[in-house]
Length: 381
Image (tube, rainbow, N blue to C red; front, top):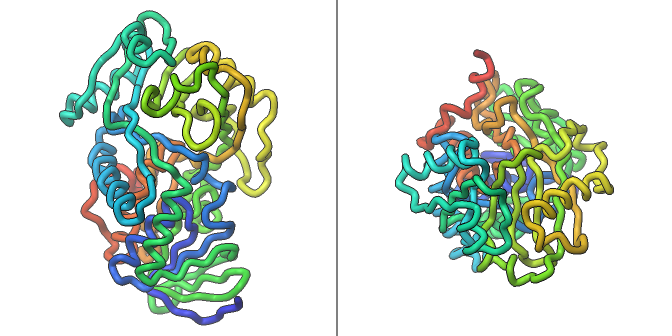
């Protein structure tokens, strides 16, 4: 379909985790919104796939995330109720490492500061309660019963369905080529199928955001990430009811993982897998033996009962900011353009509330959510 001159209130570039939520929030407010996606809805080329994504209330990264994750939980529950899709599952969560590690101590502080229910377990206590875990002596684990996972593909579909039901125009397989400001302080967006104008725009294109905004140069850097699924000897030990999601600091790095769900295998990943900065259009999307062995070694060491045959390997992308905190703001020279970027491998759990924030910025230029630490100007200091 070729289109030229269509006018909208807001154009959203990217209909993945963040863009689909943004489009849904905008449409729910009665905004005339167009969502443009380069690939399929959903797709496996960016950062919004992988079957399961961790969500946790204990958040050692920074206290500013706590009110956002609280709101995210509410919005995920709302999406599940509205669509009938099982987009969020509560399994409990584990944040573990040496007793003085930032992962354990930071998560504990966040729970204590915000009165989040939790328990502290020794390695032995953890293995007794959840036999899939085999952490070294002297490690400590923070158990938070409300942790769990979000199902990314179902979440995107749910947000797209609610957006379309509210009148949103969403178009897949349409690549944005460029955009420019217009004389009325709006935007004009050119794609490989047509040209659109709008009063404002949201950049939610993940690893491709940097292509559309000079202000993001060097601040939203794509990185190749690999995930593995290994079949346990006793799968029931690693089912959601018996195995919390986890975040673990060990000498080899920081790893994370989830129970068996929807496909065979215990899921594991390593933050900043092999530290490979990539071009999102040209990186190696096929996992290799080195990728597999890195994940298998960690599984065999800390979750030995899960280190069975390989079931699946998959690549995705992190898009990292210099401080690994989000970028949520409007562009300094173009306040009609809102940006969600730099989610640095821990953003999907927040997609529901990030969509609300980006909708606020697109419509009002501001939000009541506490996003001061995510502003672009922090990198000017």
